[in-house]
Image (tube, rainbow, N blue to C red; front, top):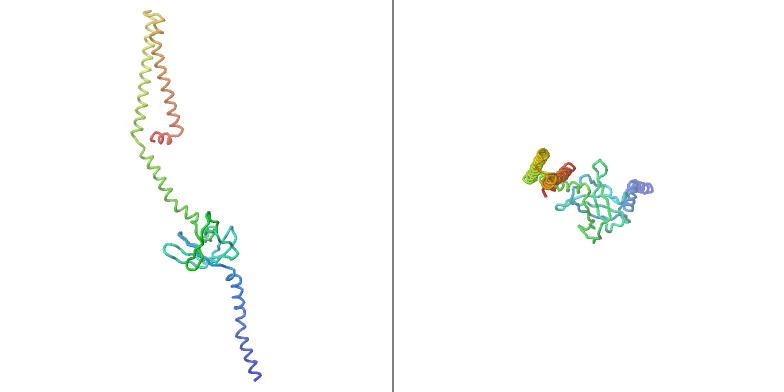
Amino acid sequence: MKNYNYFNRKTVGIFFAPMIPIVFGLLFYFCSYGFNNKKYVVFFEESVLGLENGSNVLFKGINVGHVTKKSIKGEDVLVFVKINKDFEIKNKVAQIESKGITGHKNIVMINSPEPYEETKVLGYTRIPSKMSSLSKMFESADEVTNHTTGFFRKISKVNVKKIDDFILKLDYVIQNLEKTALEVSQISSRFNKITKTNEKNISMIFKDTLPILNKNMLVFNDFLIDSTSILKKFKTKPMKFLLDWYS
């Protein structure tokens, strides 16, 4: 009988001995992770590719939790996380952040610009999400492309008629210049003729000829000022000159 009891105690000891590390392991897990963590869910509208179970949840570079699982609800991706109970989750939002060039991603907690009321979804407290910087960049790429395309289309549709009008105006000024030069030439010939034949005296020259010469020189001066201004603007900023002319 004594040997039988000894055998039973030995059998029970052998059976329970492997269970001791498991029990201590479970106690350690629940004390370290289970009891010290709270469960939350985050709704993401963007892709969560690279975000895996066990991925870190960070706040200012400090690990405050990890991802436990992912699922889909309609068009949204649900990411379930465990957060350290000591971390103040109030008025925080979640954002996906790339981890270098490896393709792996983490969830980063940032302060919400505005306070919000906590809600429950599927029994979990919901943390609002904010679109990542990378997703914003890709999302705005189409808008930037459309604006750029529209800008070049506008340039390509610059009113050719207005440019032609500008050229015609310039031609008109040049014609006036040629006319002015002709009149100056005629005045010079006239002056030579007067001085040679003595048909008129000096007083008549000042009275009749010089006013005409003065008027033509003023026209010529205005032409030079306008031409210089136009050519300077066109040479400095030709694109802006055309756009200003168009508008």
